[in-house]
Amino acid sequence: MELQRPLAFFDLETTGTRIGKDRIIQVGIVRLQPSGERETYQTLVNPGMPIPAEATAVHGITDDDVAMAPPLEAVAHEVLEELAGCDLAGFNVLRFDIPFLTEEFHRVGVEWSTADRRVVDVQRIFHRMEPRDLSAALRFYCGREHTGAHDALADVEATADVLLAQLQRYTNELKGDVGSLGEFSGDRQRSPDAAGKLRFDERGHICLGFGKYAGWTLENIGRHDPGYLQWLMTKAELPGSTLSVMRHALAHLDA
Image (cartoon, helix red, strand yellow):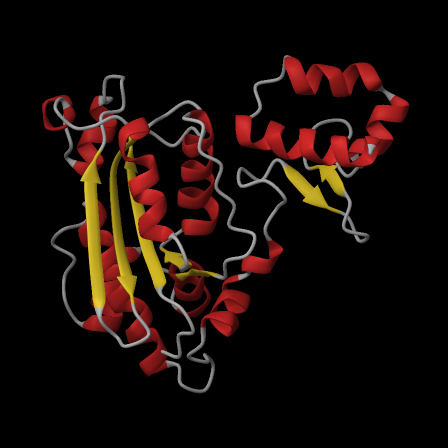
């Protein structure tokens, strides 16, 4: 791969999939350096809530496993430092891990933006080439079984191996730089907020992506139905990081 800066593969194991409701219980990171060297990081996180049995059935992490682990507040800046200065990669990272981590950081008072990062979603490359899950991807591209499935560090190790194998297999279709891979992954099609509740219109203005005013700019909603906008900002159960983007956009309009 042609890397201008480190590429950080990361994966989260969580109590569930509800952004803003569920919590992180494990973080795994593999930083692939321009030299090809790998640096790894992992930590368990005490979620401050019971881990549902259905979640434990997926990743195998129990309440006892995280009982003595630090809360996210204690490791957030450490995790942030591990991702600092890196482009990002992962398996389903655009749809799940980035919005989930963004919201969790916001909850503990840490603001994190990926706007200046290129993002390579190995799952999207895989699904466009060979529709399968991570275990099948590792079997198909690397010829081995994913024995550590749903362990955060094992998952990102496997994801890194799959991406490198994809580059070897699709030499004509894929370019070995993060910019091209991010474009292929669709990272420039992301929403203004990590949770995907908002959209950009053709002029780059922020619009709602849901509800009766889907496609309307925040400015137009404020003029047409200020009560609805006030309800969204104070009563609707929107992720805190989404509300932060909305407040920033509205403050810019007022200025």
